[in-house]
Length: 435
Image 1 (cartoon, helix red, strand yellow):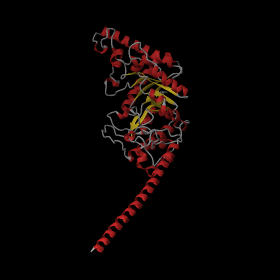
Image 2 (cartoon, helix red, strand yellow; image 1 turned 60 degrees about the vertical axis):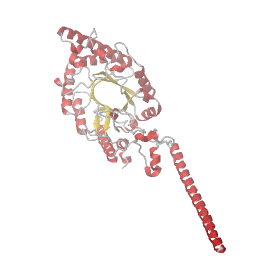
Image 3 (cartoon, helix red, strand yellow; image 1 turned 135 degrees about the vertical axis):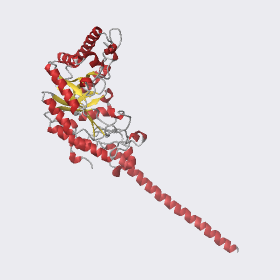
Image 4 (spheres, one colour; image 1 turned 120 degrees about the horizontal axis):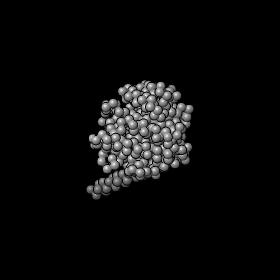
């Protein structure tokens, strides 16, 4: 009986020892594999850190929650993809150089874009700048006689330092304009006045204020800026006479348009290029009403040099042929054409969905193909076109992110990490456009 017990104990101890040995071998093998994986991951990070087109920071995954990273997940893995941070891809061809034989390429910016990565992206890819907001009426003259130049001067200085042209946007607009313009000498709203004699006095006061506003600004920048959006968005086919029923129009009729252009010419000289700027110029009703207005103004000797086509379009419309047809129509009047605010929404008009961080591949591809078709048409009609200005430079900053609702948008050629999208390659070199 004692011998049997000894045998059982021996077997149990042997089993325990064997299990320990096997466990140690498994743990050692696991550590070896883990070390190999860790070394492989570190090598991937090191390679990316040395690459001119990408950089990775493994310490901050949350910053990538807004999405939009485009890279090869088979090479880097999903985790590495999520960790890509904004960078300027040095190995890309320059947009401005790619279209040097056709027309200048521009972008709308804010003062904060004149430093950091955004500034480097702009310096590489564009040769024309326009202020997105800081040259609008309320930013330049928020109260009567109080001209604030700091932000506008900053943009002009940045452009001069980097050999870029500057466009001015905008001298006159119904939005983003100080309410003081439309108050009478007693501080009352001019629009409420019913006495005809007093209304005439108010009209003269309004036009005098406008004349001063335009002459002061153009006089300051005439040596640095040659391209001017003089009046912005004055056509609205649904309003009486097809002219936007703004306070400008209700108080002065079309006299404010005449006043602004004449003052800009006199202050800026013959070298200044003066544009009337609007959206939806591809729409026949709007196009034709704008054509009639310009023809009427030219008949009065109003110095209009060209039409600015905002070109806020989408991946589903309008027809590119309509965009070009509009330019051809204005060209018949001897006018220049300029694409002033180009972007391409990834949603259809009145579509209120939100793709979120994961924009479908087919949407990005559709956008790329449409950009390619648009720029092929632009190049084919380069004699009509004096420049193409994007309303922004990358998807991390676009007005469409909050219009008509807050959502993910991706209307430009560079994504939220400032990296080239398929749309970039579609217009620069379609043979390199990723499938």
